Picture 1 (cartoon, rainbow, N blue to C red):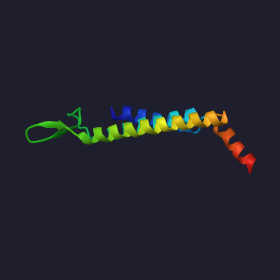
Picture 2: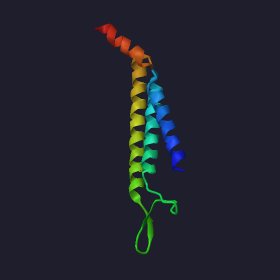
Picture 3: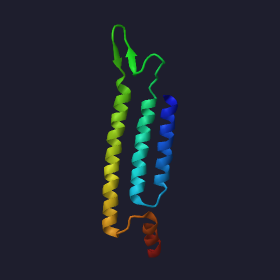
Picture 4: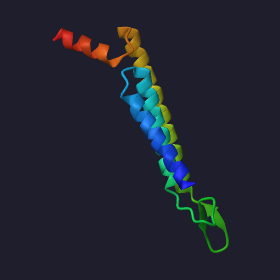
Length: 115
């Protein structure tokens, strides 16, 4: 199970890196969003699972309960990732409305021509 999770995380990081290196602003935002999903999977994989326990339980004297730390970290990461994605989408939309361009190299050329 850990090998499958490791391969999925590696593929997501590869895909996100490929998308971020693109010139299109929407692909860059999608790549950043994929990075947040890969980060959430990394946080979830930090839980220590033995061969006999299939869920992240803390063993007490009489009762077993779920470790809330991983859940709180992933929930916080999801909220931050959603907020960052929403902000970047609004920023790209505003950039497109002002410049009528959606690629980074065209935006850089306009900046170099003015100097």
